[in-house]
Each structure stands twice: as structure tokens, then as C-alpha cells.
Length: 547
Image: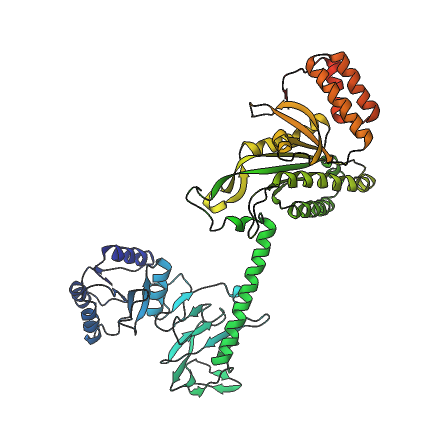
């Protein structure tokens, strides 16, 4: 039976309990509840709203009625309100189906279904008024020692109470700090803990008796001291109080804190390290944790990796990639960047998002360019070793672009992804792929070059239109840091610039001779080879080239 003057609460109680197999009668005021409780078949449990009008009258009359005074009562109360019926099981509003189920289970003495109906749920243990019952899997119980079965019972002040061992975990909410943890090896009521006048005793009610700190006990009461053990049917309980309890709680808090730190470390290995930068920082102009910033994005890939993967055992390939990603990640993070994701043998990273406790990175374009050069050099250093080992030459392919983009959480609520998206991100990806056309290793956009004036050695490659983007963009090869070109490279780049001007003016014969001069100095120069072939084929011209 449910009694109250809140129709919504009564409807929820009825729905929750009927789903558990109960027949529920509701009454919207105290007198009606009293009438139904007194005239219909005696209920198995009564749920009463403490905030309703006439609550005290209903409780007094229930207590005075010889046919109803023993019916268990669950009192739905507002959290923080003074207890008006502390002797009954209390249920704090708002509550859900599992909360109501736990409260009714406690009130019924461990029966999770109406009397007379077989329960399909594991029984819960009895606990003090206000106890909430939780049912974890035994193997996750932190108090169960490895290699042994153990139940911990922590007693508090108050009247005696019985308890079961039913695979349950109960915590009493109150100053008595009652605590009981159990595994699922015993399924019967076995005894009760009684604490009166600061003296705690254990009263055995089991069939075969118990062992209390080595002493056999059957059907009688023995005193308990903190640290004493109770053994029933092979299940061991330890009784703790005072400092012993404090030490256990401190140890458990330390364990949880350690686990949380480990979880955080694990998440940091799987997520961008600047996620903390946006936690709790959403402002009124940010929608759904997403905002727009001008940032720099880098995409990288390995040319020749596919051929190498065909010749390497999977586990060996995984180890090689792990080593490569470790080194490149250290470069990126060391230059204020964030690794967004690994894409097969590729990497996506970005710069320019504020990190906790650090100022804005106004040099994000320069940091990205420097990281690109260092990643290229890492691959170059590994190339002879990989060639000797796998018979394949591997080169870096990197694209970098600076521009406005959206950064934040994207995706459904259950599977959010903190990343960057937008046209600028797509362009950086296309620039990485453009290296295939010019046989280069690092290509940057005009915007990135403009954001890093006089910091790097570059050469203009082409004016291109990338797939999915109508506006053409001028692209540059990122060659070295300023001042690091050799005299031969500088001369070759100047000759390339002259040949490129002739090519755009339409003088193919003169341009072809110019690119040939570049190849005589640098026979493996990819851009000169590309333009020389265009001149021979009569393709291209002054317009943007599609890539």
C-alpha cells in the first residue's frame, strides 16, 4: 500500500512495485489510507509519504492497531529533513525503482518479492533503518581477500540486528557507521550483533553453531572485541570498531584514490592531453562544449609503409609502430602540440588550444612546422635501419595548415570525441596527400607560411585546388629552419623559382631547360621531376593544378 497526497509520487511507487510483482493500493490522503489499510486485506508493506498532511495521525493509528502495527513501513522523506519516524526504513526523495526495491526489500526482511511469490532476485541483507542495499559481484568486493572467503562486519551503536550472508554489500548511513560486506557462500540467517551500553555481543542463531575467535558457540551470546572473527559454514567475518575501522576506511580511500589515478593515466594515454583545458570552461558563446579558434593542424603518413607491412609479422609491425609513435609523440607534445589520433601509420595533431596552467600558444604555426621537420628527420634516421631490416625505403609525408576550425566534443552523448573539425582540417589532410604528386615530405599552406615569417626555408611548389574545396591555395615545401640550407640547395631552389616563373608564363621549352638544371644539381628532386614531366607532356599552365 502507498499513502500520500502527491499523485505523481503515488503513481511512481505503484508502477515500480507492480513491475516487481506487487499488487499496489494507493490512497491520496491519510484518512483514506487508514480506511483502506484497516478494511482491505492486510498489506505486506506500507509506503508512506512523510510530507503529506495527516502523516503523524496515520503513523500513530498504524502503531496502535494490533493487526497493522507489525506491517513493515517505508517512509519516503525529503533529504535533510528531521526524521519524524526514525524507527522505520527511510527512503530519500527523489528515488528510482532500484532505491524503492532496496527499501522494500529491507523492510520485508530480505524478500525481494511479495510473500508467497518466488523471488527471481538475489536476497538482500537486513540493515539498520535508512540502509541502502547494493549488490556487487563478489569478485569485485575489495574486502574479500585473495584466496579466501571473508565477510567483514562493522558494528555501531543501537539495538540488536540480524544479518544474512547473501552476496550483498550494505552500508548504513548514520553516525553508527554500520557496515557489512558478504560473499555468496552462505545463504541463511546466522546470527545478530547486539550493541548496548558500549558492550557488543554476538548472538548465534544458526543451525550448526559458529566459531567466535576460535571459541565454539551455538545458540548463545558471547562478547565481541574489535578484531574478533566469526566463522560460519566456512565463511569468516571480522568485527571492527573505533581505530580499526578508521584504518580500514583510510586504506579503502587510499585504494580508491590510487585506482582513480591509474584510470586517469590510462585515459590520458587514450585521449588528447588537453581535455582538462575545456572541462568547466564552457561560456555562453560556446555551444555544446564546441568553440572556434585559429589553430594549426598536422597530418602525417609514411610512404613505403604498406610495402613494408607486407614483409613484417604483425607483432613486429606493432612494435615498430609503437616505437615510431612514441618518438613522434614526444616531439609533438614537447612543442606544445596535442596528438588527436593515430590513423594506421598516420598521425593527426594540432596546436593552438590552451592547456591548463599555460598561456596561449601564439607560436602554434611555428611549433607545428618545427615538429614536422623533426618528424621528417626521425624517419630519415630510421630509414637505413628499416631498409636493412625490411628492404624498403620509408619516407615521411606531412601536411600542415593554419586557419579557423571548431574544437570540442563531437558525436553522440554516449560516445563523445574531443577533436577539431572544419575546412582547415580537411585542407591539412589534403596537403599531406599532395606530397605524392611532388614527391616531397613536408608541404605547408600559404597561411602557415605567412604565420611564420623568416623562420623557415621554403620554396613555392604550386597553386592547387584540392578535392572538396573550390578556392585555390598556394602551397610550399617546408625544407629547413632559416639558415640551414646548403649552398647547393639554395642555388637549386633559385633555379627552380626561375623555371617555375617561365612555366607559368607559358614558355615550356625554357622552363624545361630550367628544371633540367635543377635536376643536374639535385637528381632526386621531386618537384623538378614533376614539372619536367609536365613540360614534356605539354600539360598544366598558369591555372591552379588539381590534387
